[in-house]
Image 1 (cartoon, protein in one colour):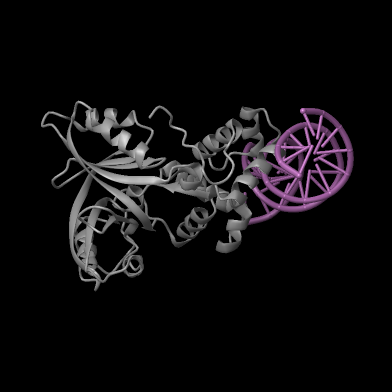
Image 2 (cartoon, protein in one colour):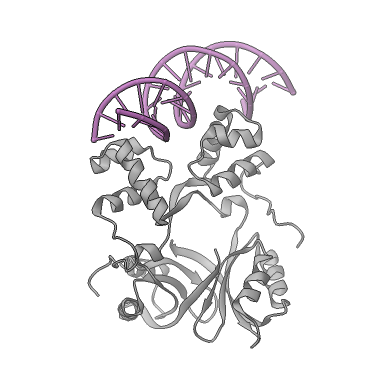
Length: 154
Length: 154
DNA sequence: GGTGAAAAGTGGAGCTC
DNA sequence: GAGCTCCACTTTTCACC
């Protein structure tokens, strides 16, 4: 693999300008259109229209604030591999996991486990409680947890 | 555990109003201060000052655009458990992984593996290449991969 | 928290490729 | 037709009080 720019099979490709705008917006999601335009040699209106178009196409899903979980009191993080009963559907599992605000993200995966769940809790005591409750969910058979020591990237 | 609002051991706690503002900003990171103020019965100026304060405290790290990876051509996702050699430090591993734009996130973890790496690639062929290259990194001994089938939450 | 000047956002008209 | 700029108008921001 030489390229890090995967081609888009669905929908027209982004041009160099779009990439520039998105790169800037990922660094500062509240940057003014005029400011972004300076980088791309574009008027503020043109920038806005491009971003509107990207939004309409679904490439841009929205904008959000980036928070520091630790400063919000969420200091413990873990990944839990969930093993389901044979009859458990992804939809049931999703419904089960949605109950927990501590579930940051969850994916169904290939391999031994059925799903991988990313948890955030206040402390290890809180984490223990959440994992216990997840294990008691009807569709869940067993689980295997890894506590996060440090974030290397991301 | 009864509460989902972990207390903050470091720094003053957020009040109800701060939580409201942050909740709204997480839904729309480009919302105007006036619009946010309407929800909290606050003037635009007051909203801005609160957000500035949260920024200064580090609770708000910044703002960003939310993109759809699939529409950008990144259609394959995987988690790779990395097992390191005994002498490999987290710093070395971080340096190794930083080379790959396909590495979305990475954490050192407790358990059998030393690190968990979240990868995004164009397709399975691309993914295979990246995993192969990660396995060849000097500090890496072996790895175990799970391909993401679907995102349940997050 | 309020006020007002400056800046940014918004949408139409008309231009160029 | 798609995409740009220019322009006028509205809204928001931000440095004062």
